[in-house]
Image (tube, rainbow, N blue to C red; front, side):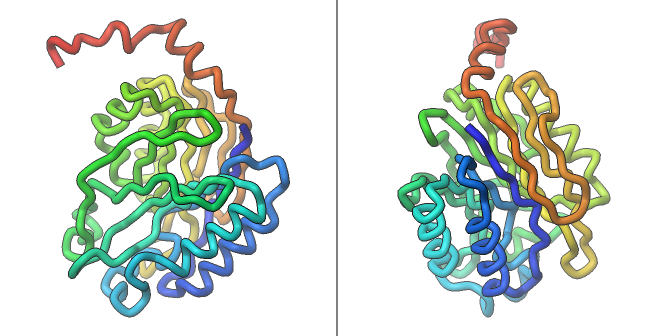
Length: 257
């Protein structure tokens, strides 16, 4: 399968403009793209103190556009994440839509970033699981989740052969981002497809470096810092082949850890 990753420069606090920007990007994708991937918080960026004025309850504007684009383009969409209303707070929610426009998976960010004061504005999710697109098992995490290898190992043990990481990771710690992405691919013997943001929000500069990494830790495609699109072929059999050649999952000591 072939994936396209949008390293998007999100316009802070302008959901309508961002919806149009994503719609235009999806509509110009080549016909051979199987999965389109967006970054974290692409509807608002990190304007957390303004969310009450910017978003609707369940992201219906964003989701309607994505469902229409998925059907029109015959493409699966790993829709990064958007801010949605959840009780008195909000959630940072990732949504996956298949080629027929059906929502097949959603994931609410589990680990909230203390450095960005996320816990004051967002409510953490409390569950995660694999999903399937075009016959391949996959998993999803959001930004800060990347620092917690327990969640990705659980997804891999549950059969995920491809891991999506959607982020708005700052330039100051971009070396951590690229190192952790590679580590997650190698230790779980799975593809990692990462979409990071570009541009700025208030004083934060996002670092880009979106990439696709093979189950052996080889970088297949990589962006620089500015807004960009990268594409890569995913060989659906490679993860299984690597796991057979280097059987780390059979070597795990589940009696000890």
